[in-house]
Image (cartoon, rainbow, N blue to C red; front, side, top):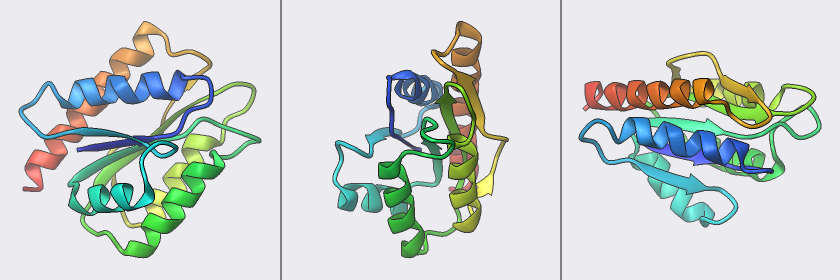
Length: 146
């Protein structure tokens, strides 16, 4: 399981860590990748090996973050196949980031497991519980695909 994210004010990062925690409830290898701090070749290698992915971006100007758009454009070109996953992200005044991530995942032919997981501003306890449950679902999907 791979949880890839970008963050602006740490809310999407908090969601990513909760998704990872949910995935780790099962006996499965899972990794967190920050697209700003992990080199693109690392991201590419990890995504090619992953069975399931969660990709998150906050909303900036009604769309996803530029660094995430660049990473997804690069990954889309690799032709990674047979992935399961979902999009997630936080937003402030308007949505858009997570839905646009989902658009990339759809173009990459990722088998979407759920609607984008979104929260406004800082994730509440309820949102974090939903993130953990989504992470566990992602791990189950990865196990099924082995």
